[in-house]
Image 1 (tube, rainbow, N blue to C red):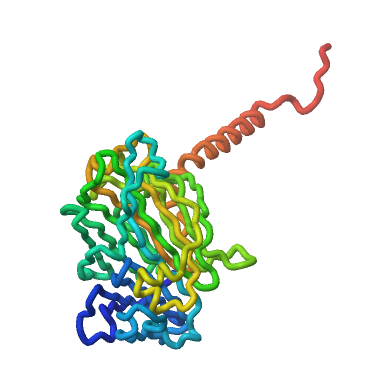
Image 2 (cartoon, rainbow, N blue to C red; image 1 turned 45 degrees about the vertical axis):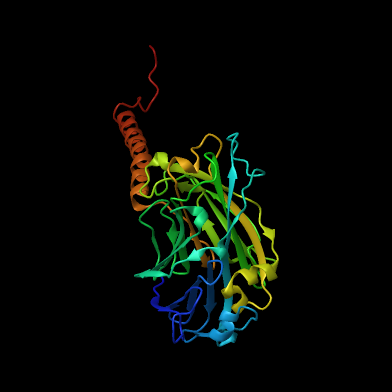
Length: 368
């Protein structure tokens, strides 16, 4: 069981509110290591996690270089020799298409994409160990796209669906599409993300099956976009989600809608760095892959039905959390499986006892 000490700092080392967006630094200190979570709205929203092998590592920001967005080195973690692993996720585009035939196949009829680096992002709203970022554009009408980051000091599980299991080495991001004006009555959306790493980028998506839907009703899978270590099965970092989104902020089971993902594809590092100040500042030679998550299947209600969509994912270092049976489920299984076994044992014992009491004679008895 792992406990971390969290400290939050908005726009570290800055003497004034920086133009163009905020930079949040959450420092999570363990006994002999540190996780640095950096959440930035300078350009496309970006989350960077840096893991070091010392409890004394620090983030340094050169704000002149950082805001210029034309050279790496504007943000560093010192000492650099302590860095064990780093991973970043960039929310690059929101895609919308007209699903007039209700096929939920996003291969044509796309509207011009929303480049998230061009949205008008509000200042970060901080509460406890959470930070909410909302962006608007005139094309949204009165709607907005919001992303809420949660950082944790220990293992646990979120209170709202899909109730993802998190560790102290992970963070959670919840995406809301709230009140956005669709450009068609039959609109569906996709979210494009880009994962940025060093030697071991996120290169594949694994799907794990399980038999318990206690925490996410009707969902028996979890998808994991992972960074495998070359030549082994170990994982350095991951993005994890369950294939479900919700059409209401306080959903019932009927408000769930499936989601799918595309295969990861290698991306242009220069274009991604140009869209995100944090990527430009920290990575000198980023390795980048990208994928889309699409919401809704054929026959499912369109976005226009509620004009709301929420989807949740984890980003972390090390191996992804693995769901296990809760004590309640284990107790039910013990009763369900144990009771028949006890009845069989008791029944067998009674039969044996009956035979011993009324057994056949020990010696042969002649007829005559």
